[in-house]
Image (cartoon, rainbow, N blue to C red; front, top):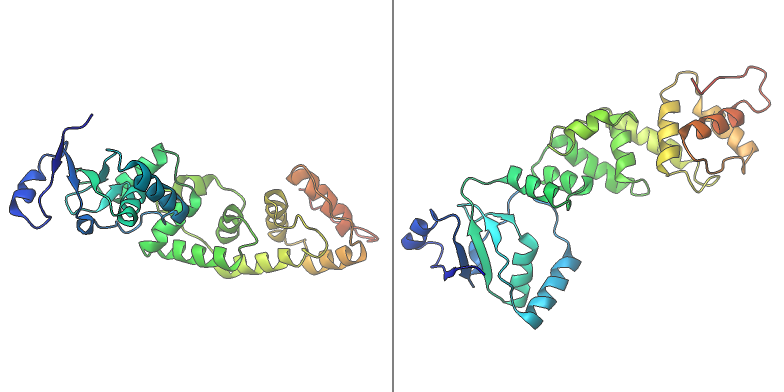
Length: 258
């Protein structure tokens, strides 16, 4: 398997020399030498418990974690935390020059990172737009994170989001407007249980951007027809349904679909 070596203590000069051997697998029980890297995803406590239980039963398998020359964990934070819980040794490889970009790349390739992981990571790095989004999503947890991103971007066009969100370059727009929209859509909850679905939220964001759409008028019509809102297969069907509700008993019909 691996050619392992028991590493000296982290502050030992011999160990500093050994750090140049980046492809070598080391083994240590001094887990205090390792550091977390700012911006890494929030650990999954259940996963850590499962790993620690397994280590207690079967021992630590030689599956090295990756660290940089500062002993910051690039890959394997769950294995390290589980090893601490199980009071076990850990295997590690030093990859000189690695940082948060490598963390993101590794997890992207492993398909482990989602939008929430990136949001949490960049919020920890104190990037303001992600901090605001995190606060917004926690305050409005009845909506999905994808919906919250749409609210805070003030649009349902996610082409720009796909290009910028994962690499830390996403910038929200009007967060006060986002909260106003979330509050308005939540007012529909007593009349429609699907108020927070992706298609319905996307439709409502599109309509709230239209000057001809009067939300108070819409709520008035919903109160008069409390069972009129039903599930639809897509946004176009929702637009048609909402237009019918909006124009009910109105002389001047408003076209909301175009």
